[in-house]
Amino acid sequence: MKLKLFGFLVVSLVLAACSSGPAQPEVDLSQRPIRVVATIGMITDIVQQVGGERVEVNGLMGPGVDPHLYKASAGDVDLLSRADIIFYNGLHLEAAMSDVLEQMEARLPTVAVSEDVDETTLLAPPEFEGFFDPHIWFDVSLWMQAVERVQQALTELDPGSANLYQANAEAYLAELEALDNHVRTQIERLPEDQRVLVTAHDAFNYFGQAYGVEVIGLQGISTATEAGTADVQWLAELIAERQIPAIFVESSVPPRSIEAVQAAVASRGFDVAIGGELFSDAMGSAGTEADNYIGMVRHNVDTIVSALLGE
Image 1 (cartoon, rainbow, N blue to C red):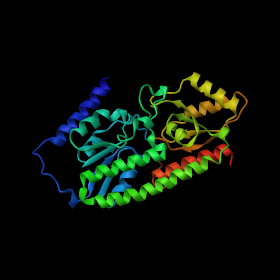
Image 2: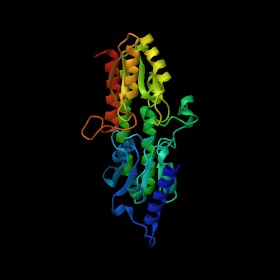
Image 3: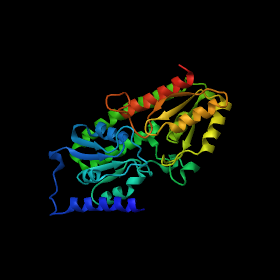
Image 4: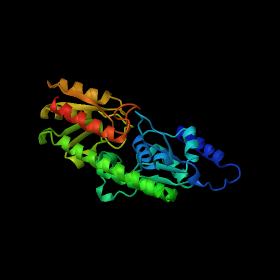
């Protein structure tokens, strides 16, 4: 409680410092690049694709960062306060930043890229404790709606560049349509009874719904708590009984839970492989195939299919 209060005071002091002094005159944004701050890397990538040369984008959360647990530093708050527009996922993904984002919303355009997604397409599994699953980027068709929301927000802020944003968005959406087809083609290589994805936490529910894959995760909406011993034993029994050939670790979640599952399966006389590392809440490092959204999704589906086929 004391730590939370201290963090709130730090944020409040930084905001007060940023807003001190005389009001600044409105800036003609057509004369300089739009300053954008985005939370997760997948949103940073959208803004870069749609905004092109008109934007300077700072992403808060880099490779390996867990957005469920991420708390804004004083430096982050300063960066946010100096932006022209902020993009975040919403749906409780950036839960630890909610106070900061609420305060920013009163000061400058602060846009949840998920806000126009039809609620009837959102998932709310029981383990998410009344919240919607925020990991919508794993259904490429839903993420295309996030692209459209970014285009709309940039156009409203900078209408003089509307044609650029529209052209860039249309080109990117065409790439995403091709990506969606690639995922479907890859999954179709798997026999239906082998379309089972076991990971550390429930980041892949939308992937499962969109592409016909049974998804089993040890944790729900947040990675804040460790999976219990009973969960590990239950999952190990299921894997051994169904002889699922591979399970997967995630780049933003410590591997120990999945390693514990692997050991528990071995104790039951069945060897399950760790099929590789998937990118769930964060993209890969710069210069790797997964350092952008399309590359991340392609890496994930190719890794899943190859491991389950034993290639």
